[in-house]
Image (cartoon, rainbow over all chains, first blue to last red; front, top):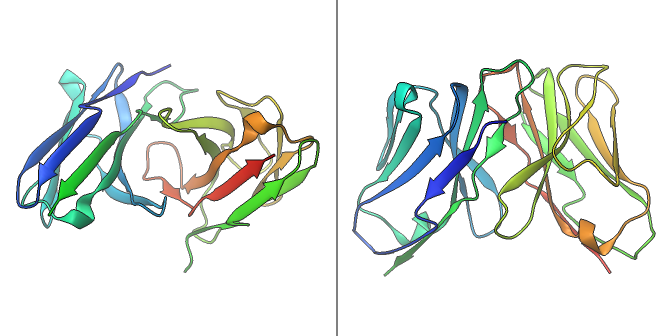
Length: 110
Length: 112
């Protein structure tokens, strides 16, 4: 099945800094999503982005499907951005499943 | 419109006990999945149902059974709970393959 790798595994930022989170995947995809898991354990949908670029406030995401990677940009980070960021991908194969990376733990310090 | 609802939110079981985790979605989605999340492992697929009336095994199905009761509901059953099944369980749904997936709030299960 598809392999999903995220980097870096951990990230510590000062409030106000910018960051880039990366997701590499091993196969062609027809679904690529970014999630934020908050300290209460909820999975929040950030972006559904199998290709192209989207922006939502201070967050934006870009997926380059031909090169099999996706990037999540966080600008002017806030302490509420802390948590774990997951990338999940669904390959185009008929029997494929939505597969998660292991996550990136982000800590934003005041 | 509640999205994906899981019950219960928390549960403590003794080894050998059984229980059923419930999941319901009100978005008229065809596909529903059950995942478990363990520290450092991301989310791993247990079982899925591509459409009403069908179920298939995922990556880690051992010790679990599922029932797609109708289009709205997909339950996960532990027949004889083991400490290795201590985890956070998430249910997800989406319309069809390739569309955006939506997750429930999770069930935190501890088996002692």
